[in-house]
Length: 364
Image (cartoon, rainbow, N blue to C red; front, top):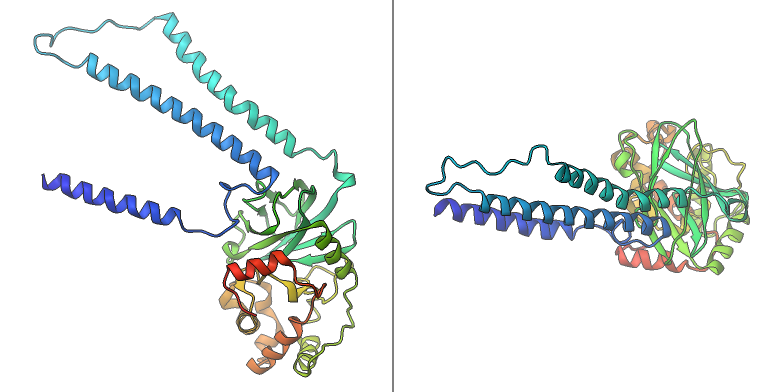
C-alpha cells in the first residue's frame, strides 16, 4: 500500500510540473499558435500526424487488451495452444496495407505543403530581403529598396516576403515559429523561403543551428505592421543621415564618443552600401529589444556597451578596442546611449513595438 501511495504522489508531482512548465514561454514564440502561412501549414501537418498516431495507439491497445483477456491462461487449459495465424495471407495483407495507407495520409499533405512553401512564382513581384546570419546577430537588406537594418525585420501584414539567406561565417538556421518553419543559413549556398504573417505584432525569431558560445542568444524579431506603417518606415530608413547631428547636449557628447570608438564597425544610416561588419544602428531608437535579448532601456544599453561579453559571450564586440583600452566609462556609455536612442527612422511610434514593450514590461 505504501508503495502505491509513493507512486501516486510521484505521479501527482510530475503531472503538476508538466502543467506548470507547459504554461511557460513567450508570446509569439510557438509553432502551436500559428500567425503566418508557413506556420499554419506546419501546424496542419502536425495535427494530421497526431491524429493518425492516436488512432494507431487506440487500435493497437484495443487489440492488445482483447488478446490478453481472451487468451490468458485459464484453469484446466494450461496446455491448450490457441489457433496459430502464421501463414494467414489475409492478415498479412491487412497489416501491410494499413501502415502504407497511414503513411500516404501523412505524406500527401506534407509533400503538398513542402512544394507550396518552396514556390517562388511570386518572388519577382514581392518584397525581397537578403538575410545574413552572423555570430550572433542578423542583418536584413531590403533588395528592392536598397536599405538595410539589423536584428529586427519589418514586414507588412498579409504580404509575401521572400528571404534570400546566406551566412557570413558559420552555419546558422532561421526560425520564427509563429510565422513559418525554419531554414538553414549556409556560408556557401543561398537558401530562399517566403514568409507571410496574418496578424500585426512582434514575433520572436531564433537561430536553431548550434553556432557558437551565444547560439541560444542569437535572437531576432519580425515586426509585422500595416502597409501604411511599413511604407513610412521604409521611407524613413531611406532618409537616415550618416551626418545626423544629435539633439541633446548629452547625446552630442555621446555622438562624438561613438564616432571615436564605434563608427568603424557600426553605421547609423541604412544605406545598403554599408559593409556588414556589425549591426546597423540606423533605427536603434525604435528597437523592440537590445542585442536581441535585453529589454529596451537606457540602463540595459549602458550595461551592453560596458559588458557585451557577459551578456552575449563570444560576440565580436568583445574585441572592440574601447573595451581593452578602458576608453569608455559608465558616464561615457550613458552619453552614447542617449545618442543611439535618438536614432529613429520614423518619429511616429510603431504600434506593434509599443505593444510589445508594454507586454514585456519594458521601460525607456
